[in-house]
Length: 453
Image (cartoon, rainbow, N blue to C red):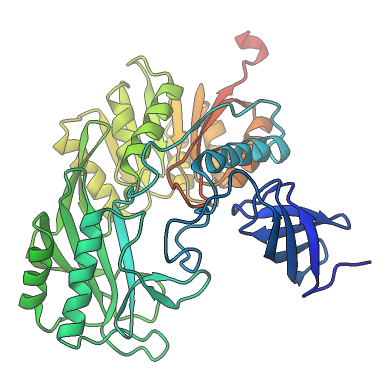
C-alpha cells in the first residue's frame, strides 16, 4: 500500500538528511522526519507525501537514541535559528562529517574518506554578529522557523552576552517611548531590525535598521544602550525604506561614536563596518583558514589567487606565506575594505580588484597570469562552469576549495576531476554549532600530464 498523508506509521530512522532531520524508509520511499535521531523507532505522522519522498513529524518516540538530549533553550524548536539542540554535540559533529563524506562519494564520485571534522570547543555564544527582527509588541528576537513571525527572545544561546544586554535595552527604549515597529505587509512603521556586532575583546557596535532617515528619542536610545553595555563603541542608523527582505539599507549614518569595530583574526586586524562580511564564528574561522593555508603548501615563492575574497581575510593569511597574493571580489565596498585591511596590517604583497569570480579568472588567464595556487570560497551555489574553465586555463598546481555546502562542493569536485584536478583530501569544520550547516576545506591537485612525468 502507498503511504498516505496524515496516517501514522512506526518507522526506524536509518540516517540523517541534509538539514539534520531523521530519514526512514516506508515502502521503499524516503521519509524525512524533523527532530528524529538515527536509530530511533518513532511513531511518525506523514504531513506530505510526494512521488519519491515523504515528510513527517514525530508523534511518539518508541525507542529513543542514547544521543538524544533535552533541549537547553526555551525557544527551541519554535525559533528557526537552531535545528540540532535535541542531540548531543558529539552526534552532531559525526553527522556533519558523514554528510560531507557521503556527498563527496555519492555526488563527487570520490573514493576517499573524510576522516576529520574540527568541532568547536565552544558550541554556544559563538556568533559575533546578530540581527534581531523587530515586530509590533514590541517583539525583538528571531523568526519562527520557515516564517516571518517574530518570536520575542530575551536571550539566545548562540549570541554573546553583550548582544543580550543591548537587545534588552533596545526593547526597553521601544516600550518606554512607544517607538513603532515596521509592518512589512503594510510597509508602515519604523523599526525593522536591531543589529549587534561583538569583537574578541567584547566591544560592540550597534545598528538600528529603520524605515526612515531619523529616529525619535535618539539621545535616550544612546544613553540606554551605553548604560547597558560599557563596551559599546558606536551606534549607526541603517536607512532601509524599500519593500524588500534585505535586512540592511544602502545608507548608513553614525548616531554616536564610531561606525566600525576592529577585530583580530589569524593574527591580523580587520576593520568591520556594519555591512562588512565577516565569519560569525571567529575561533572556528581561524581554524578553517589555517587548514586552508596548510593545504596550500606555500613556501614563499608562490603566486596565490583568492577568488570570492570578501574583505581579504583568506588572501591576507595567504600573503604572509606567499610571494604574491591576488584577491578578487564583486562587492566594491568589500574590495575597499580588503585594500584597507592590507594597509592596516602592513602587507604589501597583496593586490585586490573588483570583479566577479568568472570575469576575474578569465581576465587574469588572458593576461597570462599563472598562479601556483588558487583558493576559492564561493557562496552556497558553488563555482560556475565559467570559473572552472578559467581555473583550468590558468593551470595552477593546487586548488584549495573552502565550501559551505557539501552538495555543490561535490558537484564541482566531479567537474574539476574531469578537467584534471583530483581531490586529494578533505576535512570538515563546524563553524555553526547547533545548526545543520557545515564547512569543508578540500585540496585538489593537478594530475601530471605525460610530458610532466
